[in-house]
Amino acid sequence: MAMFGKWTPSPGGKQSHELQVDDIRVLGANDATTSPIQKKYQSAEYLRTIPHLRPRLPLNALLLRLRSLVTAQLTSYFAKNDFVQCHPPIITSSDCEGAGEVFTIEPAASDATPAPLPGLIGQSEKLPEPFFGSPKYLTVSSQLHLEALAQSVDKVWTLSPTFRAEKSDTARHLSEFYMLEAEVAFVDDLKDVMDVVENMLRSVATELQASRVGQELLDARARDHGEEGTSVSHDTLARRWQGLINGPWPRLKYAEAIQHLKDATAQGKAKFEFSPEHEDGLQTEHERYLAEHFGKGGPVFVTDYPRSMKPFYMLPSSPSGSDTVACFDLLVPEICELVGGSMREHRLAELQQSMVDHGLRTAAESAEASDGSLQWYLDLRRYGSVPHGGFGLGFDRLICYLSGVQNIRDVVAFPRYYKKCDC
Image 1: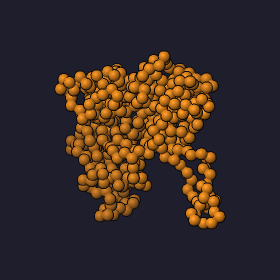
Image 2: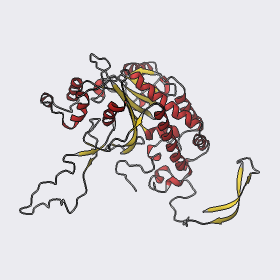
Image 3: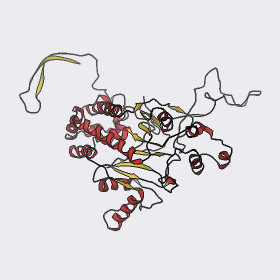
Image 4: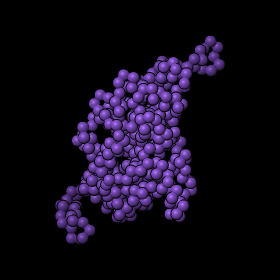
């Protein structure tokens, strides 16, 4: 509806001005009795069933504006630091992480390429030729393509959709989500990559804290908005932002983190469902403890994980070889892992051996110089490379952290997850 009147100072103390309406005109009819959105408590779970309508709620509209503000600030930060924004492909020929959790794509059946009918005499059972000549996938990461582009213009970044065929039904996982990824050429120290991450997120938090959107988020947290899925208090949200602004952020090696957790257990300061063991990796409860205690409520970098726990493309911590790789995870309270990054293996022979060690190619293929779908990636080393590193940030998780919304499905306008893809 459209309302016409005078904008006058309010006699009450709850607001500065009010509209004294002279005329109201209905622009679009709405049947209040059948409308899925009602002026009463409606759970976040229910609102997820109407993703096309829930953006009309005040907090959901505010979340859209938050995403816009954060995107704009990230773009500004990278531009000021001479990064080139790129648009890598969504359709790829390889699985960057090597985990196999990919969506395979193919065209819908058409009259031009009918599917064979079983049991008909004389009809070939041969399946149609793949559209691209071989199986292709929706991207799980833009990293490999960004590495190629960084060899041209040194520093690149992207904010683009990513897809994982994980059957995870949790508040932290989606099948389609946005990743911010960046690659930096001519760096030979992991510290330089972590500095980019820290300065980038600090700039976002500083801008948000001073913005109108930030003030509206804090105001929303000061009120009861259970029907809109709020989850943290005004003070908690303010501390999150300040934790990002304060610095420098602690940095500790994986082995130190495990020892810190063991000491906390032995001293009775913490009790974990899963005992912290070097060979088992960090569980969510361990990451949460490190962020809350070692990071003192702010972010903390954990570096130099065991080589066996990380993907094939990571550079060993030591140039002469190492059981650990030069990598990091950035942990924040409650959300836990927010960013992951590493130095990339830029030496051809070492990268080929790492692919064998991680089961991405056999020793026979290595001897025959057969690189499969990653031939082009090895070409980046074969025809000249430089030391480089990069990182990936879960953009939707960042929005969760900055907004105080607990479930990632509530910060994405049209969430896609296992057995759910509405609209």
